Structure formats: C-alpha cells, structure tokens
Image (cartoon, rainbow, N blue to C red; front, side):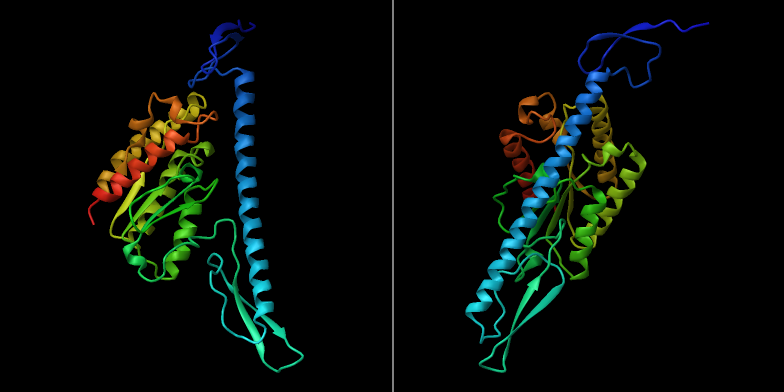
Length: 288
C-alpha cells in the first residue's frame, strides 16, 4: 500500500510542505538545507581567505628580513622581531670583499603557528586565551594577556598548538580555551567531548588555572542550536567536576540575536564586547 504524504512544517522557515516521513529531529525543507550548506561553505571560504592573508603577511615579513640583511652584509647580528615559532633556517650570504658570512635566523610559520606575540621574559606571569574564530576580535584589558585566534580550529588544532608550547616548557598563569563550534558540525558528540577533555588535561600541565569559555548561542537552524546547547550543558557539569572554571556565555547570548553577525554564528561588535567582558571577569576572579 502506497504511503500517504502528510503536511509538515519546516523547523527553520516554518513553511508548510508535504512529506512521507519525518525524522525525530524534525523536518527541514530543501531550501533551508541548501541555505545552511551554502552558509557553511561561505564560512569555510572566509577561514581559508583569512589563512591566506596571514600567510601573505608572513611572506612579506620574511622579505623585509632579507632586505635588512643586505644592509648589514658584514654583520652576523640576528634580526630582531622574529616570525612565529617554527624551525630555524639559516640563510648564508657570500661577500666578494671579505671571507666573513652573514647569517640571519628566520623562523618558518604555518597556518596554526602558535603565539608569535608571546612574551619571553616572564611567560609564567602571562595569561593565554586561545580559541577559534569566535575570539578573533576579543580585546582584554587585563595586563599580560595573550589572545590567540585560530580560524576554523577544532579541539585537536588547539591541542596541537598547546603541544608545541609545552615542548618549549612554556608556562602561563591562566589558560582560557574557547572551542567547540566547529567540532559540533561533525555530528560526533562523544568524540568532541573526548577531544575537549584532552585539550583541558594538556592545559593543566601548563597552568594551575584552566578556564573553558562555553559556546555562544547560534541562530543557524535548530540542529546546530541543539548541538551547541547540549555541549554547553555537558561542559558546565564536566568542568565543575574536573576543577576547571567555566564561562557560561550561553546565558549572556541567549535570546539576543543582535549580539551575533548576520551569519548567526560569529559575535557582532556588541557581542565581541560582551564576550571580552566575560573573559576578563573570569580571568580576574579565577583562583590561582
């Protein structure tokens, strides 16, 4: 016997349609699914463009260092203002007039190169905020606070950056981690939780105070909203049980679409201001 179509309502645009079956997560029309797909594609392209811009800046910096070496061909003094952390590469220049060689140490960087602006004199006294593109424009007035944004990063990317710092014995007074928005798109909740646990455990070896900044409310359809809400609820309980301070940004952003950009995901300027205040408040009041 042929199935009889039923009238259903799209959970995103609330338009009526006919369908033969509806999943437990509700019905989403083809138009809304296509909008979500295209929006995610745009965000992916934006992240790639941002990465290309950062790589372009690194290339220009390398060219400036090489130009500076031409001026000091008889000197072997290293050029200041190095690039981001990476492997040293020694460039040798031969002079026809002398037998001396000029060496200029150059540090090679990659997309997720960590903390080029990290202080080196007293790193243990600095606080580190590291996260995905949500923290891109965060500005914290707390002294000696480093904000490192890794566009498109998931929990394993944050862990890789912290691993590089751990190998150089870097220590921080406090570490704030903001990640998860890109992870929930994989629809692998348990894997995401395990990845976040590993990041936090690694951070504990680098600081006595670890803080997790919870996800923001997203207005990109019911699925991502539900997944982020579930992640936020789990984080609030897990952090409490594991001696990790938790910033519940969800309460601040819930019901406030004006705090997000048109993509319904990244914070607007007002949202960035609010997120910055949340992070600063937690840094100032966290137990050391």
